[in-house]
Length: 212
Ligand code: TMP
Image (cartoon, rainbow, N blue to C red; front, side):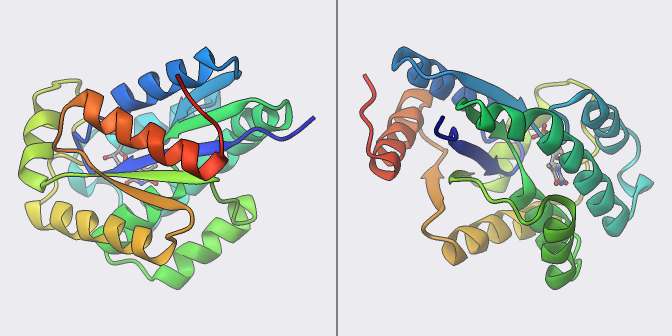
């Protein structure tokens, strides 16, 4: 059995990742592929409990390193219980966020040491990388307006200073520039359909498949 592909979507607040995850899943399913969609922090029972600690409460509730450790603890559980078993069964997995979010938010955003964060990635999940990562890029102001409009109570990160969001947008672009084989930057200011079309084109090129 061939291992499935692991695809991640990354980006700042309000980039429209969850809609794009759903559309991509439907496109892959139309090709007869089995697809699991998931998210971080979260994606397993234990990791969803940790998510609740991370996304609610005051912005200063956790410092950067505590956030990084909580995220990698959640990710380890998510990887062991959800991601790896599905890939191993030949299913494709699409995750709304993964370890690049820790590099961007806790590293570029909160200024944590990058070497330490990449070491944590190695320690927690043996540095496991996605096969393809989409970075949905859009101006901070546009993203924050959309995210705050959601009113879902998960607003701890949206409440952080605007400079933090500028730093993490720049961070995601640096990550993509460093790992060009894996990462694909998508202009997320456009329509849902145009964004999805670009993602599917990039995916077909990367995996040498066709999607209808
Ligand atoms: P979401 O709003 O995309 O569901 O993500 C929840 C928040 O958690 C979002 O503000 C980004 C943040 N986050 C981190 O700070 N570090 C991480 O490693 C992950 C996965 C998310």
